[in-house]
Image (tube, rainbow, N blue to C red; front, side, top):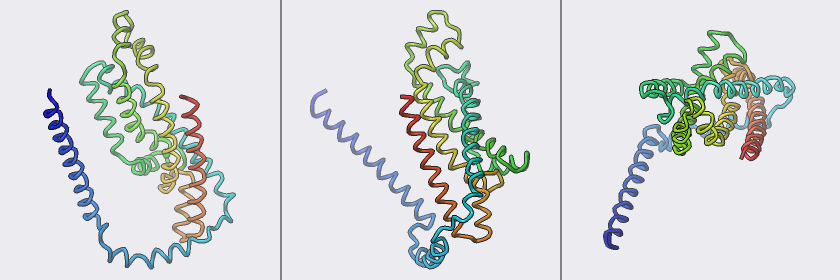
Length: 263
């Protein structure tokens, strides 16, 4: 291939990339327009209400901070328990969904369909269903977090497994290793760092999601938040939000340290 053809191929690739970027930008602008983002009059009409709400939220009222400690602890426990349960369920499903280790294409596609279904149902909907099934408290929150996350974590796990180096797998199979031995000796050692990162990121997400699930009666600090909202105690709402923010920063910091320790 001569220099002219190389330059022509580069220009064509640049044009295709530019056209794709333009199409993506156009779709985003259309979506913003459909949702009313460019409606300046609506924003102007809402500014007084926003200013009034902000004035009622400042300064935050931390007078009930002691009563928030137990719900915050429940939220933390929900995030850890939900992550642990999600990992236990996600790993075997990921092994069934990854084409390079799945026992059969039918099993692979069925498992991927199951994962897609689980992640398509929001945690808050699952939380409502589990609250109706098992009652109020942290348990429905844990179940909702875990099942929704199985769909997402299982997908990420499966993609990590799918992209492992095939040579160790071929060598293990050639040596007569069983399917279980191939997984434990050739697959998992390659993907363990990625699986650890995915798990820690999901735990960080679970803490934030746990706070939301409390709104539907699944325990945790979200229950206190919705109670303050119903009473229109916006100064306590802002205090609870700041408490959640502080805990999120702590959880994110712990997650960063765990990721660094596992590298």
